[in-house]
Amino acid sequence: MKRAKSKGGVFSADQNPRNLREGLKPQGLVEIFVTRGRPQLALFEPIHAKPGMPPVYGGHKLDFSGCEILSTESIKNIIVNVGKDKIVAALSTGSTDIIGRMAVGDRGTLPSDSTVPKVPVATMDALYNEVYRADVEAVVLDVGTPTVHEVLFIKTFAAADIPITSFSNQAAPVLNEVGLITADPGEGIFPRSPVIAPSSPPADERLFSIRTYRSVPFEAANDIAVTIRYTIFIE
Image (cartoon, rainbow, N blue to C red; front, top):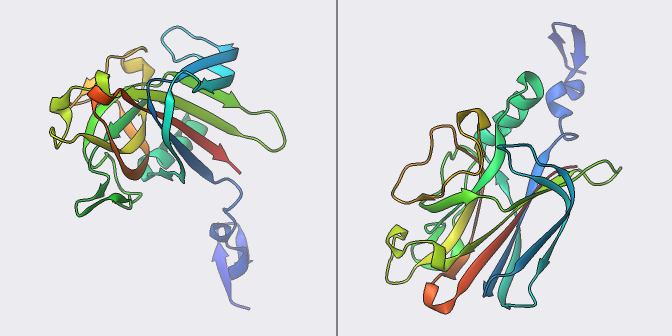
């Protein structure tokens, strides 16, 4: 058997620590709800509400009874390298950066086919073309059981809230990409003001994860809203 040396002694190739890293693997799930009208978000079981920080809850309910659901989609998330570094830094240095913002964009699909999402890569540090970012509406924490270790970030984007001038194609605005954004509360407390393209976001805000999806026509005249429920979990 081939053996390799380490500082702590000798280990076999199949004992290399790099081959044993499947246990702690942050992952994500993005649920996208497209509606005519805005759903209602109910929050309960408050965990903490520190001044200047997004409040955290232990439960929630999305109520779609007052709106029309046009489509839904659930897809796997991609955590970018910057986001992975944030997780490791938090474990080792106590980094205070938190996920408190969400951004959406309109160039997440192939130019030739708006139903085919582009494939993001881990080296990305921005959306393909961000049009709007704002604070999440809710942070929902679910930990303390043997099987569930996750946090949810929820935000509804209404077409009426985003200026048409922010979009690449103002004649036919769409949304087709979303990202979670970290921020340093020490650089400015929450709530924070929305960032509307082409304005630049604060320097302390960084992309944590990204997901592209098929284009959603996003016209204010049709009362369209896109609700994102973004889950980060560890298996």
